[in-house]
Structure formats: C-alpha cells, structure tokens
Length: 243
Ligand code: ZN
Image (cartoon, rainbow, N blue to C red):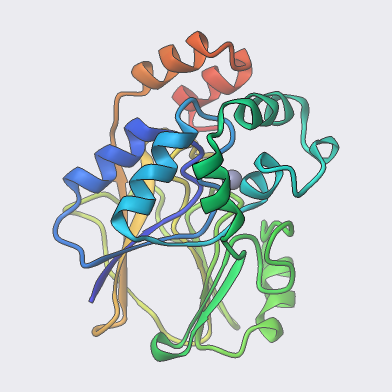
C-alpha cells in the first residue's frame, strides 16, 4: 500500500488540492493533524479529507478550533486565526473534528502516529535531538510519524539524520525505515523550513521506504483568500517565506 502522508494542512485548500491531484498513485491518505487554523478554507479541507476517508489525527489547532483547548496558549496571530475559524466552522465540520484523536497505533504497520510527540500527542514540539531522544521510550512500535513543528525531518535512535528539505521529485531519495525512527513529513499548508512549497511524503508499507516530496502551489491565491477573510498580515506574509 502506498500512503500519502500529510500533516499540518492548516486550512490551505489550494496546497492540499495540489498535493492530492499531482502526486503519483496512492492508495490511502493519512493526516497527522492540524487540518484547520491559520488558513482561509477550514470547512473545505475538512470536507476533502472526509470525502477521501483519510485516517486523520487531531492537532492542537483542531482541538482549539472546536473549543476544547484555551486560545490563550496560542500566539496572537494563531489566536486571531483560531477565533475566525471558530466562527466559520460548520456544525458538520466541528462534529468531524471532535471525533479525531491525537494518537493512533497501527500494529500491522509497526507504526505510531501522533500529532505532536509520542510523549505528549497534542502539544510537545520535537524540535531538537534532545527532545527526540526523550521520546523514543514513549512508543513501542518500530517507527513513529509526527507533525506539529512543520519541519520535515527524521530522527534515528543513536544517529540523527535530516531529510534534505530541498529533495523533490524526481531527485527525492527514498529513505528506508529502519527502527527506531521518528519522522515528520513536514507541513502541507504552512511550511517553516525556509521552503514555501508544500511538504509531504509517500510511505510504501510493503517496501518500508518513505519518500519526502515538495510541491509548488498557488501561494498568491491563498494569500488573497486570507486577506479577504481579514486574517493577520503576518500569517499571510509567512506563507511566501516558508517561515
Ligand atoms: Zn500545525
């Protein structure tokens, strides 16, 4: 099975559609959370994943957007966007988001899926080797996939290896999944590694290889939609910077 591995879509429908339409054949879609927040199309992104039957986790923005986490813990731009998201989410979208969990264990694939970290599935940022090393004892499976930091990266137990953020098709190099591994496919809708293109990965469950990808999308169209929704300027600007 070829799995399209997504995370941190953040209501960026244009980026999501580019990835869904232009990625070579895949059999399933998994999303590691933060479907909404920041971006201008939360209901549309929910509907798209729902229509695909995507295995989707809850992210901290998803939880906050439906009123199950306080907005005070977010920085001002994120908080303003979440207040807007709360206003526009339909009851159907809220119900779908409310049913998501921040962690799923898939024993058949030797995998743990989390939004943030195995130790704290909703909030902890795995931003360095130290935090990564502290998280290895917190999952039993060979591998764990995580999101939340918007940085495509892999941490191996003992040795650390970064996925080249510039790796794109056809140059992109498949990475063998050898235990024990923590891996983040990066963010579809708001990359923060200096490359504004949507980040995601294809995971082949038979060969146990994962291939990171980047894909261009119409950033200006998303920025216009954000401006029309009166979303914060800083959030609009950062999309073009990938920061
Ligand atoms: Zn996020």
